[in-house]
Length: 247
Image (tube, rainbow, N blue to C red):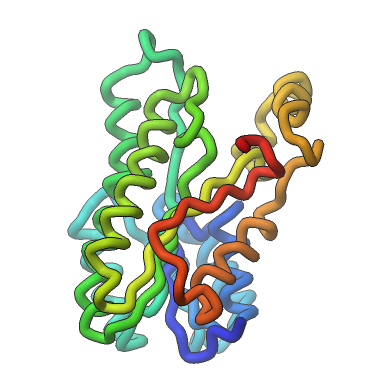
């Protein structure tokens, strides 16, 4: 699944799933732009580790919820690399609470980053992809966007919204040879899940037929396939990577 000559923008790339995706796509030959909002230093460190010359990596800071910052990051990317072939919308955050106690600010923050951020990024890269008549977009949703989860109304709504965005964008962009897919990870071993108690982890794992958590590398492998030429006839799909949690 060679990605030689391809330029991939990965949001939320400073840790976890985003970092694993950036590392995997780089290993597969792509040039990588690592986008971080709050932790640019981590993204810079990863970029330097992957390619000390800086010829195949670039780390940029941007809040994807801000369309002006997204336009700037796309402009800087095009200025250096002239094209964007792959977009991975992975940036996301959680602000959990039961619905009746959830503040409007926490609702807006999660929707703005997780859903509006993906919209901003797709809109910013779509024209260039349409002109090149080629592109691959992957939106990182979640199984909770399909099944819901108590205490995560904002997060679940944002991830469900990504699925609708994925299908609409796939239909709009297909005629220009641009594929748009969503992935829906389940219980993945990341910093977000490490803070859970052992009791909560065991309760979740008891629902997973494979009886184990997934890894960020598992997710990255799926993304690598979806942005490769081998997946050129796959678009508008939501692919779960959850150990069988949701069947």
